[in-house]
Each structure stands twice: as C-alpha cells, then as structure tokens.
Image 1 (cartoon, one colour):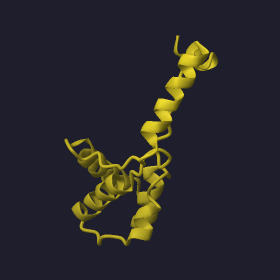
Image 2 (tube, rainbow, N blue to C red):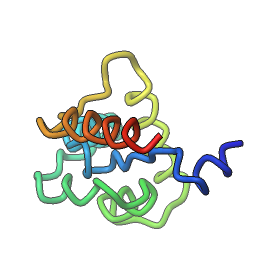
Image 3 (cartoon, rainbow, N blue to C red):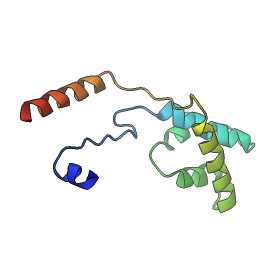
Image 4 (cartoon, rainbow, N blue to C red):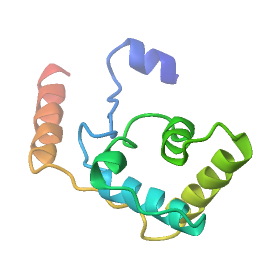
Length: 112
C-alpha cells in the first residue's frame, strides 16, 4: 500500500534534515553532551554545524580524530541516549511551513 501511494502521488515526504526544520540546536546539544561525557572539549560552532547532515560515525570520527570503532560507538550511544530523553528534540520550523501544508492540501482538494 505504501509503495502504491508514493507511486500514485498520494504521499507527502518531508525532508527534516535542515530543509523544513533547523535541527542544529538539537543535534549540537547531543554532540556536546556526548563529547563532554567522554571528557572532550566542546568544539566550536563551525565544527558542530558540520555534524548536521553526515552520518554520526563520520562526524564523531572527525571530531575525535580517531578511527577507533569502540570510541566512536561510545560517542554515538551517548548522543542517542541524550537525544532519546524527553524534551531533547529541539528544532525551529520556518514560518512558511504551515502555509506550504495548507497550500498543498488546497491543491489536493481541487484535484480530487
């Protein structure tokens, strides 16, 4: 059913990785938490911004300057534990987003 909905254009997909939302605050807080828990120094904002998008393994390998899988996985576990805690999903939605949804719903209603 899901595949047919996508194929027939009856499905909306949302890219929440910086397109419709600014998830930098939430991601950076999780990265900082993981690094501080490991006894590392807080990276600057440019380094933290580089963590939005790429896989966590790549980001932590770069920040920790290591290819030690155990250390990288420890950082990821700390990141995810912090991210999974209540009220840690921080993002801002651009003001235009509700209008995009409303416009799409009106177009859908006019065509069906």
